[in-house]
Length: 306
Ligand SMILES: NC(=O)c1ccc[n+]([C@@H]2O[C@H](COP(=O)([O-])OP(=O)(O)OC[C@H]3O[C@@H](n4cnc5c(N)ncnc54)[C@H](O)[C@@H]3O)[C@@H](O)[C@H]2O)c1
Image (cartoon, rainbow, N blue to C red; front, side, top):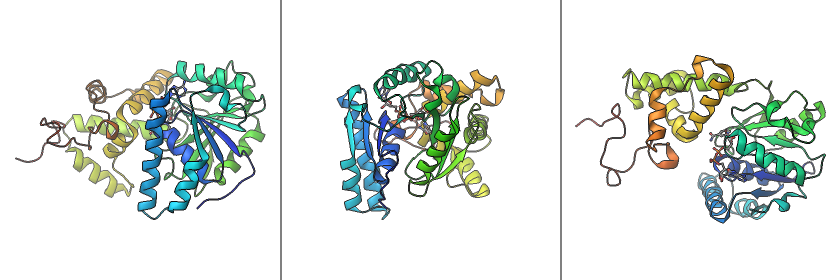
């Protein structure tokens, strides 16, 4: 349902990838104007197609109407020119999970928007406080961590860094609560925040169990999804997240903590090296290429019975 809001009315989103497109959709559906910064026209076209496909799914499932779909698309404006972000009231950074890439774009954006404009990061695994270091006005910086897919997942972690003002935390909680069906959880800036500090070791253990031939990929997912009452199985979840995204996140948490629970399992590294990234590449633990596209079995653990 489309609502209107007077707080943080015009939002700049950095990156129109998996998460940026979903976040832009959620913000626009709340009545806000959204300006998205992407690297170039080709990536804008790909991100826009992602946004449209998500809205099409929502219309098909009766979650939104054709009129709301059109209104959301009208409110999301994409650009590759930094100066177009100058008038925004809030920036949500959702570019690739790479410290150098995030730092570079955040530096440029912080110098472009007004000095009191809050800037938040959707990072999964980097430290909010470290990302704020060196930025002009680190007290206006915080984490705002959406889950994938952003339009469907209800929880949003609000993560203050060491210098974030309490007023900004309050504004971000209010922002989340103005988004349809979303719930804010305020979490300390610890590696993985709350959800990923528990989720990433679980996903790593499951990949290792698959590699150890404990059960087939399908049976592992069925057991955990239905046995624990989860919405999705862990291997299907990895395909949705992107194996490359999970590898980056768990590698960053391993580097930050030296906790062996975050060490990337060898099979995960191999799948990523082989270009098998999950849904985005059409080939992952549970996402299989069509037999015509690729005659080889997807996984030695996941062959169909002859
Ligand atoms: N994929 C997930 O399940 C998930 C969930 C929660 C949070 N996150 C976090 O969200 C962020 C984005 O992840 P994603 O999965 O959407 O990645 P993605 O690779 O799908 O998208 C990243 C986008 O950023 C763009 N980009 C890179 N540098 C840029 C720049 N300088 N200016 C503008 N755009 C730039 C890329 O072109 C790309 O379209 C990461 O920090 C990730 O950790 C991901």
